[in-house]
Length: 446
Ligand SMILES: Cc1ncc(COP(=O)(O)O)c(C=O)c1O
Image 1 (spheres, rainbow, N blue to C red):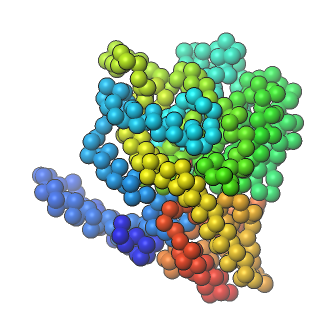
Image 2: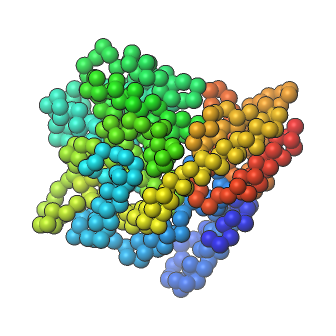
Image 3: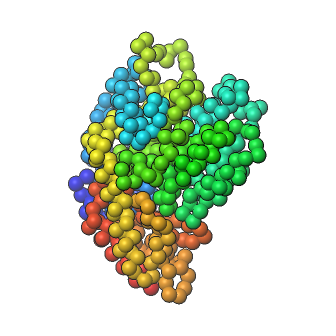
């Protein structure tokens, strides 16, 4: 942890070297545990990416706040099964408390149900399962008992820039990707409300509208208030995928981006992204606890419930036995406080703007997005030649220099590099060093 800011952000060891260092046959007999752990640390370390360090800008990757790392050590040591209250009263109560804090911090519907899952993909799954239950129940169908095959048809409307995990979650729920109604998005990736209004009319089918708070490339937010108006006029369930964008709600400066979130029927986010909790940690909130519980809850005689009727974690998650993820979330929220979360989010956004401002001064670099959050989309456009190839090559050179790490993407038919500033420990100096690395790579390529 102490050296995470100094070491090469991407490791130098090769695939073959790692296979050799970590591989070999399964030992026949026990090996001393300390020797095993020492050897594991030695062999794995050359293959570790400094994702917790201050210059990792790939995907949308949070670091790990010190209190959350310590909470994770406790979680592993305590080894609680957070499935039922009787298995760990402390784990259940910590989820209850942290869940309440989160609803308050993010301005969500008071009394929403909360679940702690592996990530936003599973959070989307859980929320959409609740939506499926709630909508089908309204038309007299019990999907948990009677399944989906003969059920009334559900209609799901998504923006053209929907995150792939929403599609993956719907697939698991029996709704295929070709069955989705896609509505146009604008140049920043925001669902166009007027396109939604056109798409939603003309059918009385139970409908889920999936909106987004924070596009994975641009950071842009769908206009939630306008979308909520349209959804509520048609009795649709509004789900919001806010994997990282939902955290804007914690900041007075940024919460206008998620105006209308308190009208969502469900929303999903990650703690392992912007809250800087170690992997894995996703969160789901449902404004209709009965639908949420009906979609997730299971019973068996041996799964004993406490007579005090506390919150039973497995009533709200797609898993039964699970790690006590609530401890680390609790530690993050308690150590940061309300102002600390706001400061973390605002700082990352400020640093993203600094990145963009520095890169814009380079003639061959174009910033493709409005930097409204923590995401910067960068394209290299040389005076002559192929800009796609130049962008891809620049990404490769930056990755090779190892001062920082960022990845590539495609945006509106163009190659681009993605910068996501999501780490609690990133400083202005880290951004400047990293921007210099990108500029150097751009010039070297030219
Ligand atoms: C908008 C959005 N939704 C969902 C996800 C999936 O999150 P996870 O990989 O934590 O399951 C991501 C991941 O980047 C995302 O950006």
